Length: 326
Image (cartoon, rainbow, N blue to C red):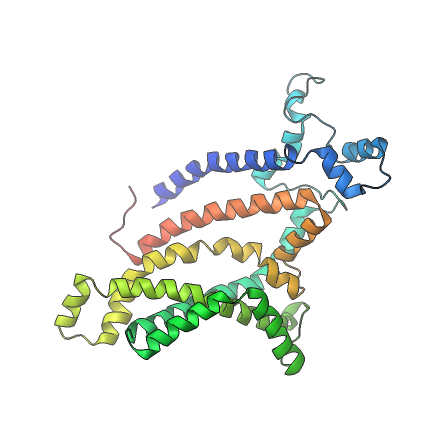
């Protein structure tokens, strides 16, 4: 296991480097430093002197890859690629383009509100979807199963915005059970997280339940299930003990891949509920056209996605001891 993790870590290094290069290409070839300066300073009454001054203040006046005006290693150091992209490899995100704030500090400060929303949504969502899917599989080919599938399709068809706005109106404005939006520190933050968490679980349960139900229905047709039934085991034991354990591998594949969202936050949820997390941080940076923040968040999301892939493989051995890594 340890050798496999180390091996996967080294395999991830060229992937991370490739992602870094792609991000650099998208942000500096597709969108040049001159374009960044114009969008931040404003397109009206802007002069070339103002553009040049802004580029020099943020080190965007340097060449992209090779600085022929320097000598030695300075030809590499004094470039946009080295100063803006190489630091991302060890999570040095630098300063924002618009107001010069420290991006690493903002990420460390905003990750707690994001986790307060994402972690309960993640855990409660898994519990709800597996429970609901197993109930439908237990009552398969009955009106409960048919009605549950129809309900899942309806829930999948409804936009997440409907759940957010409807939940705010019903529970926040009419019933006044929870705040409509906002955030606070300490234990007072819990009352602001209740409604977003419930809406997050409700909005995702439809599609996840249909997927899990399909896995369970496929599993109960296998030979080992028929053998368990022939031994006289109750259907509850067959489903909840034998089928559940073997069906967890494909379920884990989809579940663990959502781990990056625990840190990145929900863009819609945090924006509508005014939660100062990473999701709203990214949305604010996009609206302000602060490319340094957007670039950092894209890179951070890529790293977390790669970590999710590794955790997916490792989690397989926890539910199925027959799996071994060579």
